Length: 282
Image 1 (cartoon, helix red, strand yellow):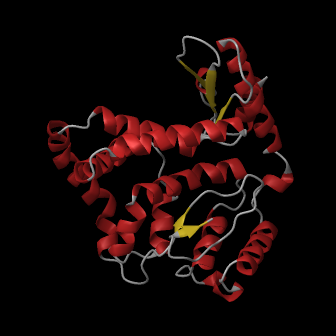
Image 2 (cartoon, helix red, strand yellow):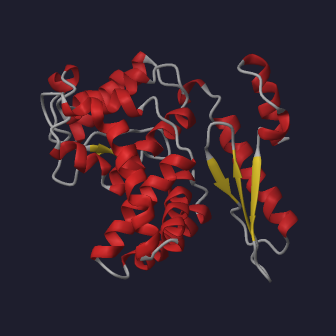
Image 3 (spheres, rainbow, N blue to C red):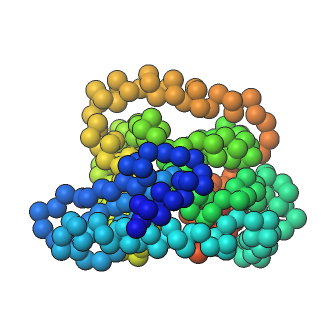
């Protein structure tokens, strides 16, 4: 049913090979409980919610959760519209220290939040979450903090990374960042990986969208697999080349620094903007 749902959606949009529509990943385990993740077109990920006694049961349960979210995502209330943006910005301003008049200024947290929504007008919440995952990882990885220190404007960062997608190259270079952190603080990778695994398990048990948590686990696992001085040295020149390529256009930018990053929107589509020292815009 899940495969058929997305197959029918492709008729209205961009056609793609049917076997690539939905991807299942069963986690190896010698005994129950078995776990399975299913990734939808675009990258949204869900996992089985129940305690499953077989791999087939875990696969079916993961598909059930993904199908429920897929169909719910088709409701009109799950699409970003001008009315939704207006309501969300007003709510964000009323629940934070922001001001509604800041909505037209991308240099403010409210303005950056409004810009993110406007750039995604017409998209569904799942589609918006897929883009938000990129910013969540950039925040978690420390990249947004680096851009702030370079005095990059939030508007430029949002415009640039809204067009970027997660791929193996991006994951590899995020892993390099964590390898460097491991050099400074021995044991950090293992600690962060344990935390990421715990967060992923907790999110799966509550039926949440999982890509952010799963990407964190995979990036940290990749970094840990190369956590020795030789690997770090061999990757260093490649990392510098990547950074020059992705950050070059920002060196010439002037204006406000990136004081906040974009983090996890709520499960019910209520997105909030928060200006704080924690660098968060929800």
